[in-house]
Amino acid sequence: MEALKGVKILDMTHVQSGPTCTQLLAWFGADVVKVERPGVGDATRGQLRDVPDADSLYFTMLNSNKRSITLNPKKPEGSKIFTKLIQECDVMVENFAPGALDRMGFSWEKIQEINPRMIYASVKGFGPGKYEDCKVYENVAQCAGGSASTTGMLGEVPLVTGAQIGDSGTGLHLALGIVTALFHREKSGKGQRVSAAMQDGVLNLCRVKLRDQQRLSRGPLKEYSQFGEDIPFGDSTPRAGNDSGGGQPGRILKCKGWEKDPNAYTYFITQAAVWEKVCDVIGKPEWKEDENYSTPAKRLPRLNEIFDTIESWTMTKTKFEVMDICNPLDIPVGPILSLKELAEDQGLRDTNTIVEVDHPERGKYLTVGNPIKLSDSPAKVERSPLLGEHTDEILKEFCQMSDDEIKAVREAGAV
Image (cartoon, rainbow, N blue to C red):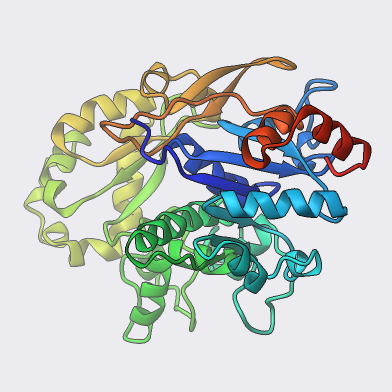
């Protein structure tokens, strides 16, 4: 049985952060009604379009398993329909600029009057404070949340990551908040506001760097490469290249074929528990008895030498051969997999982590599946809706409108 079957979500979101949240809820079985502007729809329908006159991958990969209704709440007839949708739904999710719904006449207080059980969830760029009205995009969130300042090579410019930790990451945080509020409502009978700020979400994902910021006040961060290179630390957590964030020294190393293949690399961690196995694998058994390498603390100043030696070995093996050799020995390694390799990975398709979906306008395409697996509630990914595809059925189902009434609100420009 679908875990969230029967939960009705009024989806007022657009672009990425909000749609990530509502798509996750839809995967778990919630009935997500996506409200879009008549004739226009979510801006991402037309952004980065690769097939003429078809919804873009940007849209289709963020809006699967949803129904679409076009609606203009600013019209009197549209306002009535919107009010009815609020009455019928359990959750409203939005990522508008601050005050947008208030200006439509639907403040939180008004929504509570219409439906006291409504859970009103919002994605914002910043939480309350001097920046709360600022517009925020993915890279802005990464920069303001601490990620960019700690990403990249020491002495070089800050970098943003390809993982959408600002948008999609915050959408995942908001989904957890919504489910928690739904659980609370079962006890209290009341709805509540749920908010997730993108800056806050990024900072939450950067917690190990905040950990290191506090450690830095008590001395150098010895597992960072710069410690072994005698480079002094400043007053904030530095960029650390590909050093491990978990206290176990690790780096990305070249593998066989790296000269032509930009992804012929592996991540290799010299975990203390398997140090002797590492020495045997790389042909340095004498290091097991050498006093200079006998403890993690003694190895820290020698990390460059150690990883250079390991890399001399990994360069003789493909990244998959390194995995095949090290994994049975419990040596933590991981191949650098390209998106092409991931898209073609049969194992990921077998678990529905990557799925192929058929779309009436663009044909078959790949999309991500639900990364969270429930044993009794498997998620089936269905295609994204066409603009306004379900308008009539939603008006009939939620508002009990007749065909003539639907025709009238269409002529009024409300849907």
